[in-house]
Amino acid sequence: MDSFYPILIFIAVLILIELGYFALGSLRFPERKEVRKRLKVLSAQSDNRENVDILKKEQLSDILWLHRILKKFSSISKTADLIEQSGSQRTPGFFILISLSLGAAGFLLGSKFQSSYYPLIPSYFINVPAIFVLAIIPFAYLRYKRSKRLHKFEEQLPEALDLIARSLKAGHAFSSGLRLVSEEMEDPVRNEFGKTLNEINFGVAAQDALINMANRIPLDDLKFFVISVILQRETGGNLADILESLARLIRERFKLHGRVRVLSAQARFSSYVLAAIPFVVALILYLMSPQFYDPFFENPMGRYILGFGVVWMIIGFIFMKKLVTIRV
Image (cartoon, rainbow, N blue to C red; front, side):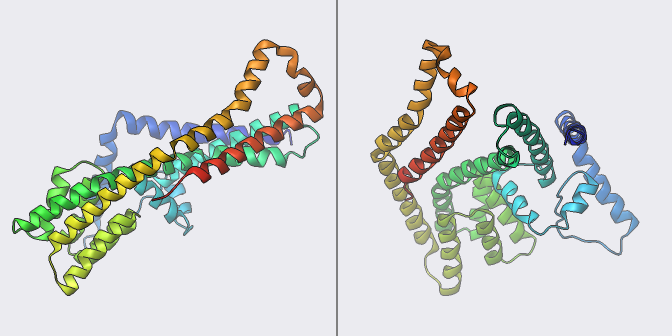
């Protein structure tokens, strides 16, 4: 086992060097990457003009060998969708390399912690949770960015629908309303409606382009908008009035959600207080009497009690947060 550590450290350091090299290059000279891509496209077109592929290529990694490996896994598409929904410009390979590096660090830290504090517990009881917790940090960050981006999109959607409705009332086509949204509003609404407009301009049917946008942005309100437009195209009706009613409905739902958050604020604050009390009391006792916890750390059973206590506190906090979270 001891001889395995240098190999693992070497792999982790190698991955970190690769990540640092590509990150430094993209930060210092971001235009070089774009120039290389365009030159590759031009050279490919000049070398083989008969076999020209206009389909969009999915770049899974800037490292060629990693891109080839990731192409063999069908599940990598879920990671690519998560990155696209989060608005990140990085490739899936970038986050996978970071996850592997953090997982290796978790293995080293878990092994050190297990041998120092919990020698009687099998190593996998410490190493596996440490690897898992550190390895999911990049994807937890992506999910956090995705949640914030979707929430911002949901807040901007009523204004976008009103803008399209006003454009229709002024006599413009539906695509003109999409163009107004892509030009006048901010990201992420501008970016997503711009992608939809580009797909329509390149020959994709408006119905399919709207469905693609609904797949990229998994929000119920956006699905209502897409369904409304598709039904109106098939059955007829006043699309401007439909969009105004949908925008008004979304705003009313936001108001209801705000009232629910106000009414549940006391319960949420109580959950935070209950979760923080044991740790605050433990810190106060330690400051008043540093020798108070010596029996816990000197006795193996005391360490187990502290470890299980922290774990159950975290589980209890998760359950309390679930109970006070109300979806409107």
